[in-house]
Length: 347
Image (cartoon, rainbow, N blue to C red):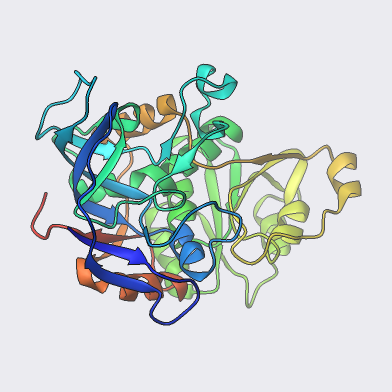
């Protein structure tokens, strides 16, 4: 089968588009014919080093994907060939305390496709039956492919961790990236007012056209001063931060007393100043978040099917343009998600 895989780390020819063996589903697994996949920053991380993530090379990239059931392993009765599906990326054990409590992304034996095991940048991928979700006919494959990582992460951040309420104010750093843009859409769905930051005036304007009430160009403006002006000195109720070191000081100073900060990434670095005195004196609540539960994924799929949320796709790349897509992502040129057409012409 045709696949996009890593044969090394950190080199100009690390990513290869070539043939790989067709995977065979084990008992309890389903082989999915991938129609569309989506790019994420973790693809760049795996390409550049993959440090700290147990994996072996060659490794097929791709965390997100949607397609149709192709083959079924032993012991499976719930799926039939041709069923439309979207893949929940975390392959979990189903038995540990976290799986039993419905917190699947905390599974002690979790293996994520495209990180620990072969991923979705291929014509076929084998996944555990329990991590497949039925895809409604009115959700296109490219839209579905944007959901499992960015949109599910944003759903958990906004709806579960931050518990955003109507009329609250939310600050979102780095608008244009998949998680930030999804978080903005969900904050508006929750009835909140949204402030966004970016170094691009074009991205800020597009965000205002979608949902944001205030855009701050952090290269020219003081983010905290802009927030305080907008909130009349109170600060925001919630900060969504997936930038890390570069934005963290502003996040701590922009949030109100007793406010909430939710972080899901550290693209600018993982070691910000903690400023613990501010945290405990102002009783700031800080939560980490990534992916979401199976129940949260079902809720997200329902919201997309009802068009309460319309995912934003910046552009779609052909299969053999995978390296170009990753470069586009690395340069931060996107406004929304980047998708990869595994089978051109698929709906």
